[in-house]
Length: 190
Image: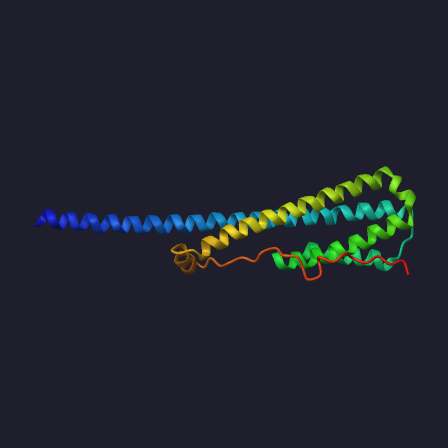
C-alpha cells in the first residue's frame, strides 16, 4: 500500500511540476515578446527624435538663404515638439503624420523658391540625412508591427491567452498611418 501511495504522490508532483513549468515558460515567453515590442517602439522613438534633432540644422542652413514664411517654419517647429512629446504608438503616429506633412510642404517650398540652395553641400548632406532617417523610421515601424503581431498572436492563442489574462498581458496597438496619409500634400505658393 505504501508503494502505491508513493507512486500517486510522485505522479501528482510530476503533474504539478509540468503545470508550473508550462506556466513559467508561457509567462517568460510573453515577457520576452512584450520586451521586443517595447524595444521596437523605443527604436521608432529614437528615429523620430533623430529626425527632430536634424530639423534645427536644416532650418539654420536654409535661413542662410532666405527669410521664408514664418507660419511654415512654425508648423515644422510645432510638429517637431509634438513628436518629442509623444509616448504611445498612436501618439507617435499622429505626431509623425503632422511632422511629415509640415516637412514635405516646407522642403518643397524652400527648394522651389531657392534653387541655388540645392547646390549647397550642407543642405544636400542634411537632406540626405533626413532621407536616411525617414528610411530608418519606416523600417522601425515595420519592425515594431512585426513584434506587435508576434506578441498579439501569443496573447490571443490558447492556452497562452489564459496565462496572459492571469498576468495582465494585453494586446498592443499597431503603428498605423493616419487617415489621409495616402494622399500627396499640396504645395501652394499663393
